[in-house]
Amino acid sequence: MIIRARQTNSCRWVLALLTALVTVAAIVGLAGSASAATTAGAETRLRASIEPAAVLGGVAEYETAGQRLGEAPDRVVSVVATGVAAETGETAAQAAVHGNSASSPARAYLYRLYDSEGNYLKTGISKNPTSRYTKTFMQDKYMEIMQSGSRRQMLNLERFIVERDPGPLNREPGAGAFGGDVP
Amino acid sequence: MTAAEEAPEALSIGMIIGGRTPANRPWIEAIQGLMNEVKAARTKTTFDLKLNVEFQVPGNHLDPDFEGVRTGAFRRSESLLKIQVAIPPQAPADPRRDLLAFLGAAVDAADRWAVAKRRTFDTSSLRALVASLEH
Image (tube, rainbow over all chains, first blue to last red; front, side, top):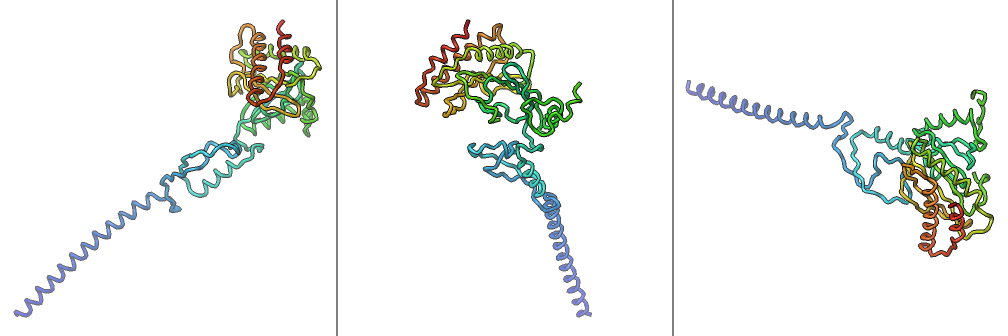
């Protein structure tokens, strides 16, 4: 009888120890999973961190490739990258649009050119009308800005006008093609 | 536009209108008148320095990005200097008088430019031409 009682007491002690170990393991496991959940919330589905990253020596987001002058000094600009790789690629493609492309984001001006007597010479567009022509050409002439807007809008408007009311210096194909439309 | 270019004149006037508004109409009419006056007054005598004065009239689409009178590019082969004049937004009662003052200021600016560039030009003929317009 005495031996049996000793065996029962040792079993109880082992059970208590196992229970304590299981409880500690459960607490440690819960804490680990909570930490993992917090980290996953800060990442995108592509596991790219969305924390802002400051980069020095970049180009301002409002500055297109065409607007950057070759002699302009490099400026220190903070660029905040918040998107994933695919979006960054699209922005770079938009910035690389040529100034003469219809998709160019630069403001364009529709103008009409006259001589000193007021005779109409041509209709055209330019993103910098003041330097469009040489000073020799512009002597005794004047340019009047008619409209401004996106390059695509101005190209469409120029084409519409030149097809119907071309000046003698509008030598492009299609000039006057719809001359009969003008009443 | 190279084929359409002509030989540079001693004094020529150009104009860029940033869009027509009621406020700049007196300026535009006065500059057009002065342009024809200069065309009629200039002679075929040779000048040391030729000036192309460009008046930039502010409008509803485009404004000059400077104030007053400034020198532009110089073409050495034709001895032609460009002078740009930013016209004020509001026209005075007599715009022609102000335009003649701007022409005088343009010749002054050319003189200052010549001194800065260490070049010697005789601008007395240009001044005489501008003075002949003040009648």
